[in-house]
Figure 1 (cartoon, rainbow, N blue to C red):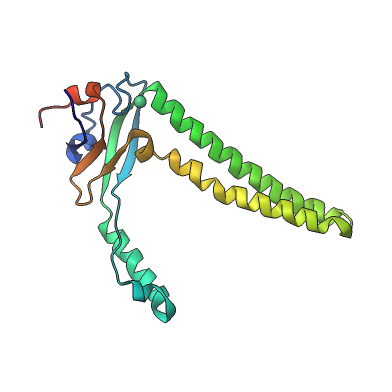
Figure 2: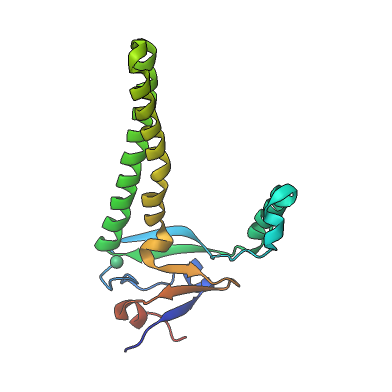
Length: 179
Ligand SMILES: [Zn+2]
């Protein structure tokens, strides 16, 4: 088999958990099966003019509503994850957790020290507090890398009904029922 691009799996198949025993990314045997909700990516439409000015907020609400109406989800059951997938996911999750908790500790810690310290040190402490705050926000990046969709390289199709898998491994493909 050669030349795999993006392949489609019936969403129904994924929801019933009739999935291969090898992972879709690396083709290694699954060490774990994961249940999760896989969303579709949505391109928001709407005129640019309405995003600014008085109607900006209104336009935003409209787009959020549109987002809620157009996102399709698949309730995936038992997706195969190999040891590499599992390690990738826990790795990014750990980085996110360390950044978030570390940032929070820095932020809260500098506030507490600020209350106890003498006035001269305030400016440096404010800097530490800001850095801590920034860290908690930046934790969103590793957190998104840990997302199931990113790890397995799959999304729900924009119109729903199918799951799109990006460059699936031959071992994963071989175990799929005839499509
Ligand atoms: Zn894998």
